[in-house]
Each structure stands twice: as C-alpha cells, then as structure tokens.
Length: 260
Image (cartoon, rainbow, N blue to C red; front, side, top):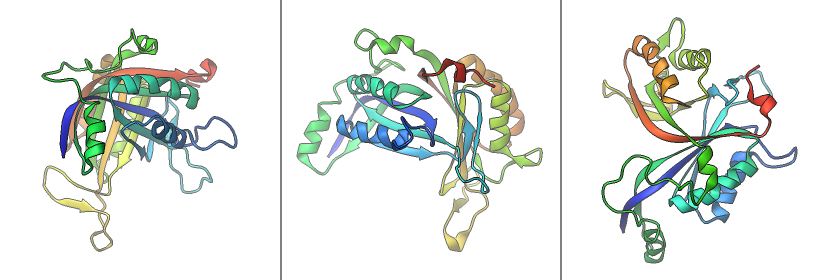
C-alpha cells in the first residue's frame, strides 16, 4: 500500500562521543531509543568520516587514535506535532549540537493494513505546500522560537577528487572552518555513480578508489553563500544542492560553545 503526504524531516548533528554520563550509551543511540519509545515513524543514524562540530572543532578519524571523534547525523521523519514534542528530548540528550528541520514530502510503502492506517493519520496536510510550512509551530512548541532560518548545503563529489594535493572533501571542510561555518559532515557511500555514469562500489572484485562522498554544511544563507566562490573554483565535477531549513543550536556549556 502506498501512502503520500507532508511531514517534517528532523536532522540532529552531534558527535559519536556525546553522551549524558560516563556510563551512559552514546547520545545518538539514546535518541534512536527515545524516538522508538515515542512511536516516531523511524530513525536513521549516519556516521561521518570527518567534519566540524558546533564549536568549529575539527572531527576526523585517525588510525592511530584509540578513540575516534567523528560527526554523527540522526535523521527522523514524522508529523510536525510529533517532531515538536521530540525537540525537548533532544535538549535533554545531547550536551551540545545542532538540529535542522525542513519540509518533507514523503511516500510510505506498507504491507500491513493496520500499519498503513496508523501512518495515514500522520499524512493530513494536502495540496501544494510552501517551504518550511509543515514544521512544528512556535505557538504550540515555544522552543521553535529559538530556531533561525538557515540553509543546508550538500556537495556531491568523489573520494579521489583532489584540491592542492589533499582530498577535496577535506579542503572543503577546512575552508568552511576558516570561514566560521557552524558545522560540517563528510559522508562516504559504498556505491554510486556520477556525471560520467561509471558505477563505483566497494565490492571486493571491483575495488574503487573513487567512492561517492557527500559534504553537508549547515549555517545561515549569508555564510553558505560565502563558501560558494571556493566551491566554484575547487569542484571540477560534482553537484551541489541547497535547501532552506530551520536551525536549532543546543549549547549546554556556553564557555565551550566559543571556538578555542
């Protein structure tokens, strides 16, 4: 059965080492567990290989380090009211980080009739919808008054792309840090193809040195636009998307929130 309608896409940006206490599970795991307890439609955890946290600190996997510090993204899609209620859970769970909210036109495929009826009740917004109009309302969820308009920039390139003798994805992250952007995440895919239509995969018989890479950066439109001239120069082959989002920043320790 196919169900279609408007919902809210919530993306929470944090670090793999974030947790509420020494013996607590990672914050990303806690968010997924809490999302399940709150009966949200689903959650997906994406682990980055490099990026910037909300303080502008470089996060990067090192083979010689006992503990890697890398960025994590938790994605959740559900109705605006359900996402609005979950924002307080995020504030309780992550020590500092960032969340974005955007409109999501979703299509559900369900085998079970009972599951389909349950999901259908969450797809009540019909017709043509303006960007950001399906987010939780500030009147119902006051935390939304603290959110700001921003942009989500995605850069789709290849792992083997180089800029001045270093991986292009790393050069982009370092440039974002230099410009003071709030956060960045580098995600590597196990399979994909680009403009030349060649399929790149991690299969053992087809070892590729050019796997797909996505660099995600969230900040104000002004700061995102400041990065575009560098991308025009550095990205020789790839694709860039820009989406309007609302941005919530969580900082429990304001002293730590300032870059060193």
